[in-house]
Length: 390
Image 1 (spheres, rainbow, N blue to C red):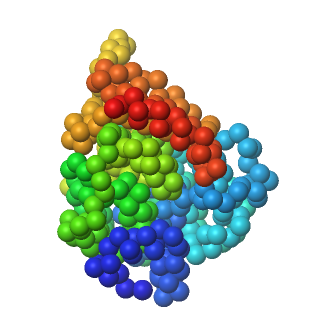
Image 2: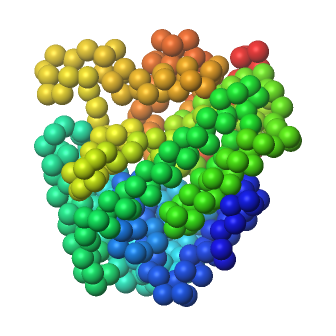
C-alpha cells in the first residue's frame, strides 16, 4: 500500500480503523516491526536501525478476559487491555516490544509480555528516572545506550551517527507537521474536529515515519482548503489526561456543544511538542524524552534540590506550558480525564485544578475504566459543565 498524500483524512480514518494493516504488509516484505508502550522509548533508534516503530494501544471496545489470569483487576485498565490483546494474538505482527518504567504497572507489562505473549522474541524495559535533574538525565542516557546496544544485537547491525541523525530529522519533521495540524484548530470555528485530529495521530503511530509525514502533508493541505468545516460552538475546551486513543470521548464532548481545540494527553501534544535538539546523540535524546516531555510521572520543581519550597512557583514550573496553550488556542474551559487506578494522573488533578483556577479557567474532572460503555454516564456531566461556560 503506497501512501497517497491526496487522500488525507479518508486515509487517516482507514488506518485508524485497521492499525495493523500497513505494518503487516511491511513485515511480510521483510521489515522488522517493534512495538512500544508509552512515550519514553525513543522511536528514532528504532527507525535508524531500519525497523518500523508501532505504538501499542489497547481496545476500548473489547472486554478484558485473558489478562485477568496474569494481572489483578485493580490496576490501570489501559495497560490491562494491552496485555489482554497481546495474549489473544492481536499483536502477532510485532517482532518485539519495548516499554518504559513510567509507573510500576507499566514496567510490569514488559515482564508479562515476555512471559505470556509468545509472538515477540525481543523485549526490553527502559528504566526512566522520576526527576529531571542533570544526574537523572545522565542516568537516562545510559539506559538509552543499553537499549541501543540490545536493539543493535537483535537487528544484526550497528547504529551509526549518520543513521541516527537522519532518523531524528525525520521525526522532528513529523513533530513540526503535527504542530501545524494543531494550528488549524486555532481559528473559531476550528478547521477540523478533535476526532479527526485524533484519527490522524493514531495513524501516525501506525506507520513508518516517512509515510506518516506524507500523510500529514496531505491532511494539512486538504483541511486548509476544505469547505465542509465544523461549525462554531459555545465553548473552546482543552482536554488533559493520560492515553486516550479512541475518538468516542472527543465526540461525546463536542456533541455537548463545545469544540475541543487542544489537548495535553499522551496521544496528543505530549508526543509531538518537543523536538530533539542538536547534536543528535543519545544525550540529546535523553534530554528530549525525560525533560522536554511534560508528563505527571516526572517530578518537577522550580528550584531543584532546594529545601525551602514555593508552592506557586512549583505549580508554574510544572504547568506553564498549559497556560501558553490556553492563550494560544483561546481556551474557555478544561476537561481533566483519567482512567481508573492511574495514580500518576489522579494525584496531579488537585494541583492542576488549583492552577487552572488561578488562571480563571473552569474545569471538570471525569474518570472512566477505558471502555466505551463507561462514557455514557459522563455525557450528562459534560453537558452540564459546558452549560456553565455559556
